[in-house]
Image 1 (cartoon, rainbow, N blue to C red):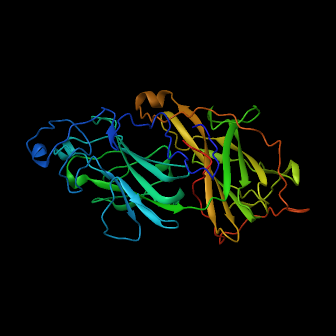
Image 2: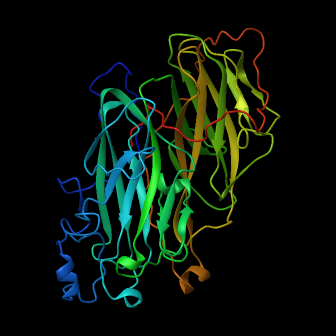
Length: 423
């Protein structure tokens, strides 16, 4: 997941670069790990042409049309509107609903249960007039075991896409609508039928729909960069290998890209379940605090912190420590994704939100895993060194900086998308 910083003035910014583990090999908008699965009609399914094979989203005359186009989008406020399957024209400030249809095509119901079913969205973090979202569907015992389809957002202006925090949901006949974790856009969210256990029987009675919301923006106000390292080591990376009990140090860099001063810049970090914040470990570095200042409020990972005001190109670094724990680690490889978010406001831009992430890779094995293996393969990003905070640009904040915690009533959006990183 190399970071590639691009000028916001570039009209030719690339639309999306996926990590190696997510990149489709087919030239179509849809694809799969078999390099092109067969299509079936409903009549073919009724005639038993699948046999005992479990396969997903391969019916050409399904109730959603061709199931290979299982990712679509529409304006979120347009209830009942037709889903756009390949491209959708979007506008600044509008929120869109993105859909991923899930259907185990085998007609034998509970006799042919798909296992390890997981959905993932890869959302472009570039700035361009066309940005693509790819949806993935995985199952450990399906043939093929990975499926993908995409939807492209188009605009006459350069845009970037903000995932709306907490908007991921799954709807089916047994559970109605249930919330999915934000990991839907990183390592994936486990699905299911009557519970989110990864098991989905065959036939239409057990199908479901994953949705999330995406907000479109044309304004670009900030650059945010998130890196990590094992505490006590040198060099910053997007991902590190660690073990339970290790302490890891995170670094967040913020830069004001607006041509005007911004006030009350809010930083918040969202820790994954298996990383705990270490008390009294948050330090702020900027032009007023070249050697760093301890922020004793300990609210970076809860309500967030106000790091003050910044002139054009003014920057700041925030560092803090987390400890790797085992609250819910799965057997095999675990990717613990940690989000950093900045909210900025100015006279021309109100509450724009940007984010970046870093990962800690933790493996879990031992006797319990040997007895009941539940591997969770995840992509391993290529580490990319980033500079330590040696150069601080003048912020224009004067003698002091506001570092107080914001109250629970403050308007801080959790997740958005930073334009400085392509995956």
